[in-house]
Length: 391
Image 1 (spheres, rainbow, N blue to C red):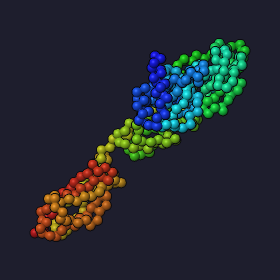
Image 2 (cartoon, rainbow, N blue to C red):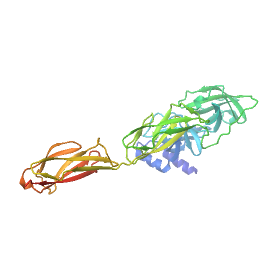
Image 3 (cartoon, one colour):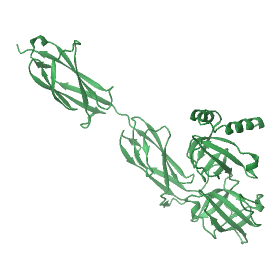
Image 4 (cartoon, rainbow, N blue to C red):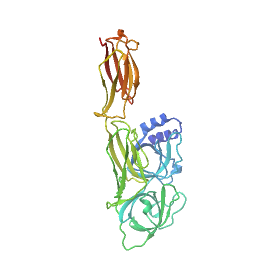
């Protein structure tokens, strides 16, 4: 990117304080970029921080409509980043924070399995001698990583190898929300395995998550989904911190326990389940089946003058009658007159009983009985009756 372009984007960032959703949506569409936040695809505007604040780190400003927080892991520009600033809710209708590039990915052994974790590493041996508040002593390093169910399994006295050296964890500081700071000291060992981790791209942790549940749903119905988490050896773990979400366009809703209420007929939904604070995520595509709804109004086609009779209606969903559904009734004279040829004796959502006028002038008149589906005015049926005389 040219210097002029960077200045232009920074200038736009300084104007994000405009209190207008449309302005930011315009910027998001035109200079925003696709990222992932804890493994979920999202979109954000990424800009440079001022040189005075960035010190020796690769920091960027992130601004998005998504609810971000300190400790969130971002994938952007083929690198992992951690949000290192506090994000205290929305500012000017969006969320803003500072993210820092993870400068190393380190392999730890957790429950006997290699797990690669992106970290921000500080230490004289790797060229960064201080973090935000303190200077790191010689032969010691500090690793800042996301606080999640996986990293919380790292313990004091655990060791690892990196840069052809071995380190032991001598302290774990969890006081920054969403982040863990591991204090590590170099140790002398005869042999230490250094796990090979990718420089960028997916974290080869070996852990994965599987969503189980129905994939073909009925409209306006409730379903429950389960997320099962497995480690490198396909052993299931009881992980309770599962974050459930749906694609933004979905009209259906899902709660924090994986309970989904389907909504729109024919809707295609993507369900996401993620181990909180990690990139361990699965998605499941489900479909709300399309319903063929029709109304059938039926009964006699002739009623004698002065007599009563009943007309019926049923609602068919995919060809099967649903007795819990019904219609609203409308009566209209076919000749367009307002004269009451018939009167209503009683009615409910399934039937209407009519009494025909005894006036012989109404002989051979026609009346339309319309039954309209109570949940959709565009679905109806019309039954026509003829008024006839006994003589």
